[in-house]
Length: 260
Image (cartoon, rainbow, N blue to C red; front, side, top):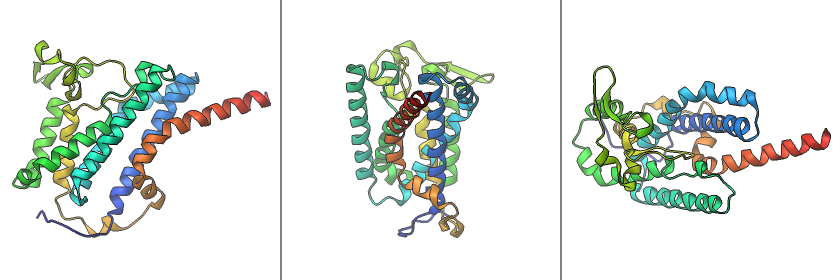
């Protein structure tokens, strides 16, 4: 049965799984950076190899955020803080593009932080109503909607449904306004990170329903403390890992030239 908890103990399993997802993300971005910015074919091959599984560890991160909302003291405060960070990140990147420190295809219009901020605030708003939906039913509905909406974004096909069973093309009239970009309905421009509400908001809400179930005792035990540390600092790791990777690569390249 679903139960409401106010325990101050951290669920170590959530931190460790979040840390695992973040580590995978760092390696994935490192392969892209080294492969395409520093022209290393081996890393390009690794990036292409891991590209098909990227949605899975992204989904894990979004899903875990949904679960964690059930343990938060204030999802409104959490969502607004994350929204502020997301807007600041976009502003800083816009300045970097303006001053030609970044190319436009690296700009983030609506990335994972934007997605999570909006999703958390939606959950805070809808929580009084969502509590009347049984967790198992909510999980099933979210899973079905996630699958049906997976190809809604223009870069994924621009249709609702399942290929081979039934599809419903998104009307052109619904893709004309730039504000619909957040929903995945507007034609996608080149960007460094894009997580539209459709379908990813359903992955998030699936986590919120799972988080209502009673947490098993074994989930509180720490097995990989270093992953838990990374998971607790996931926001900072997300914000700083790419600049840090770039600096490290530049230092290695400079050192190699000096030695050579």
